[in-house]
Amino acid sequence: MYQQIDNKKNKFTGLICTIDTKDYLEGKIKIHEHTIKKRELLFSKYLAGTKIHAEPVLLTYNSNIDFIQNKHMSNKQLVFSFKTNDEKLHSVWRISDEKEIQKIQFFFSKLKNLYIADGHHRLASSASNQSNGKCLAYIVPKSALITHPFHRYVKTNMRLVKKFKDSFKIEKIENPQNYSDEIQFYNNKKWYRIIETNKMESCNLMIQKITNNIFQKILKISDERTSESVEFVPGNQDINLIINKLKSSEEVLFYLKPISIDEIIKLADQNQTTPAKSTFILPKIPSGLIMMKINEL
Image 1 (cartoon, rainbow, N blue to C red):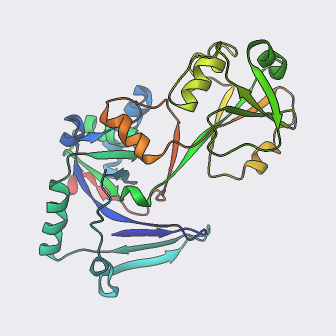
Image 2 (image 1 turned 90 degrees about the horizontal axis):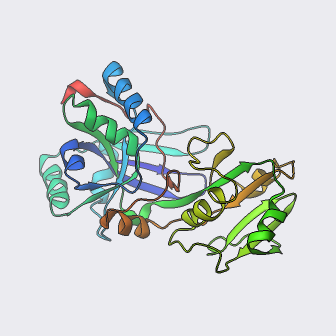
């Protein structure tokens, strides 16, 4: 068992284990983002060279039932517990009782699917590497996960407010709303919202709405993943610190709302995906904290 408690007292507790990449290839472990082939090949090369998993894939499941029990985290089973410089407390307990291991395995055998919360490239590269069909995973109940968006910082050579007024109805606002269904952006020391019109293509996800109506049609950015004009800003950062870095009228920040873990699971069950860099999901385990040799199993 691994538990992380951050400086905001958020507590993440889950199981460190190996999973079979066959379940991923057969669709039992579901995705919500497509991988970039170049990055997948890079990770696969890394695994072949190092022969270690240095960071587990973050998985969850669609149930409110929690398999974690206090007896899994007794003082007797504690392996280590320490704080890092960012004030996060990391604790690991070893489960060695065969009966308890079988109970946990039985619990997961009854689940129809697992879902990737973070680590699509790591799992895809593990499956293509084919060293032993195993991958290191960290399985956390969905109720314990925290989802943030990735905001979009864009540098452009056009006067965006004027350009938007030609296509949409916009108005100034004091501050952005966290769960608004309207497009919100910051430009030239002011916050704005775009009021939808019949000119705007309707989309289920906010990021898809921005991509289709602004990035592609107005900014002529066909693929934001490869564009040098776009940066992805994790949504757990202080938004005021982010906008204070915007100095030019040609710089804009699009403020995204988070996609809930239930929405992610629903999309995955329908074999649909979100655009790349749509979700920033906590917890994040530091690379190298828990590792597994590929040839051990």
